[in-house]
Amino acid sequence: MLLVVLGRVIPSWAVSATLLFVSLVLMRVVAVRHRLTADRTTSRRRTLPRFIRGLLVAAAGLGSAFGVLGDLSSDYHVLHPTGPYSCTAVVRETSFLFAGHGEVYAVGPIGIAWRPSGSWRADDGYRPITEGAYELRWSQDGGTLLVRGTEVNPVMDGLHSVDCN
Image 1 (cartoon, helix red, strand yellow):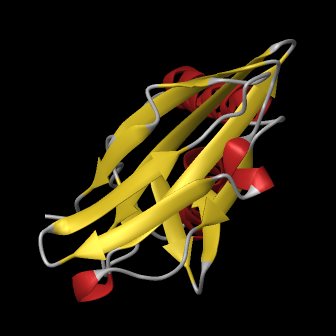
Image 2 (image 1 turned 180 degrees about the vertical axis):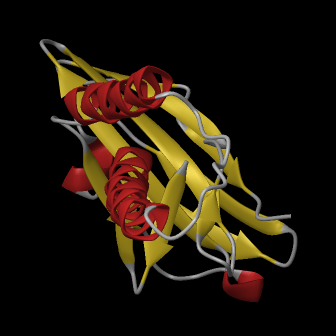
């Protein structure tokens, strides 16, 4: 998942880490409030045991950490021009050792892309979008992204549709 806010890409791990932080703050506020009101009331509410809440928080924290690790070598690009109905093509490029990889996302007017609409591989860690070796064309039906390689650094599967519908 990707979130685009004011032309900036926010990866899913950043969204989940923010939600985790907010939930921890709210849990603490509820705990303090419960302690303050516990003296006045005798009724007890049913809540999850602390151990289970701790496991859920740890799982969410580990998920965010693994997301960060998987995104360390990533570059995000918001491609221009924007297509019909505020459809935007966003690219995530990564490289590891001698392999490059890219994904294109179709981001609609609400700024969320749930999954990539296409992906490619490149030789020798080549990042064609960073190098400007692409062509983006829009029509009323959607967009077409052509990612080009070089003779030395070919790109496999370089033609992708970008459709926000």
